[in-house]
Image (cartoon, rainbow, N blue to C red; front, side, top):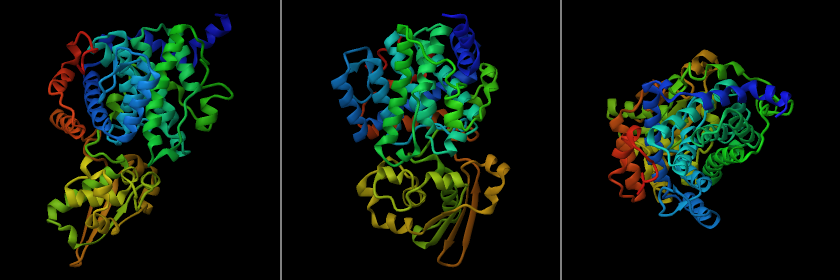
Length: 458
């Protein structure tokens, strides 16, 4: 390595991440951070199980079966072990197939759906223990969410899908840790991951969204393996004149956040939002308001004349299907989310079918739901306090108008689900997929003391 290359590797965002990943002592991670990481792993593995029942996940498993050699890594919902790259891909597709996975506002990103499949595959490949898996997940999450903070959501607002763009970094960081790469190799791996990162929000409402989550997990793992084999990567991939900062983020970038790795824990602040319903998070606060008003006032859906949702512009930009034709489109539809909640108590996995979507009562109530973004959302401070919040107004046929507001949905980091609620969601996901693994949840809850993760799904 030349002196110039060595100097380059030591500086910049990639150098800071690489040094932290390679040098982190496991006992330096606070117990609260490890607890959040474990909840994320439990939730995501449950969501992968549910997602494994979808057609797109079946396609990913079929692709893995024809293109991958036998290996040590499990694909959840299948009975075949394969190479870690294909396991990361197939499980990543399943993790996001139902849009039931968690979110983080540091980057407006689906983090766990990419990081968990990559970390799980790399841990099984390396025959790592449960504590090492948790540490690797923390490493991946903290690096990816630090990158999200550094970008200040500019790339998301420009139409890039952050899960596809930032996800390979989180997946790569987790895999590099489990493969025990040194700082130089880790920097090369991260450079490779950043160089190939991509994803556009045109994927919303199609199989491309789940596909890109799987590709992000696979890309991160592959970058780590390439670096382990000796490949170099652009360690100035962020700062280069044709790099990430200029091309993705309009020249804006707060590189200082990477120097705070291990000091500020993004898994705690801003934290992770765990979904309790399988639709885009942009609809969750509005759903909570609708359910609260219905319970408080005993509303019969047949009494409703109209429902108006006053939401921030980003919610309108995300929920683009007012009249969804498919279950995938329904996941990005405010009318569907509100109507399914009022008719069924929540838009659940059972409502994500063509038959359920064609229900006449559902379609009639959906037609009465509208969205707009009022003047209140022009205040940046108000938007920051409720980034996907909702003010709801429900007009009833008897002339009454009921109103409510919610800043964040239940399940958000500030209103977290309990361990029991996460467990109930997990078991429901397994039932949805028809998977009988009664020992899996207790095994995951005991992950910190597990000697090897290879037989988790035996």
